[in-house]
Length: 157
Image (tube, rainbow, N blue to C red; front, side, top):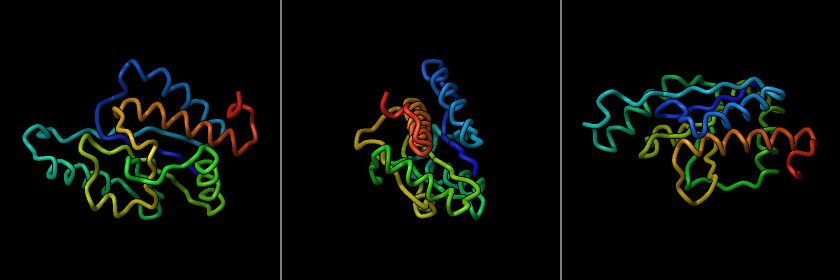
């Protein structure tokens, strides 16, 4: 199984880059992993929020494969404890899912089409965070989940 982290927006900012790289490297001890930063449309500033979400949604839906398991990060999604996240990942591995894609939407969220395509909608918190911080928290939480599944001590250090 491969883990993919997709984010709509700019490259990692320097203040999160080191942490994202650290946890991404650690995750590779469990699963192949990659980041895919999807650029916002060039004319984004001239689009309404609805039109921008639609354009970004088209990019996401075109890039997805039929069998990809899409986890949408959204503050309105289901909150999980670390053990619940670990169980969700392990369950997908047990089902022989080839790719789990964790998607961080654009500044205005995602289109209805992307939300409907999502297999699971996950909330890190009811709070709204800057997308850059979500990348770091996502990478750390996935690493934590992997370490829980291997019964390693990271979770309780």
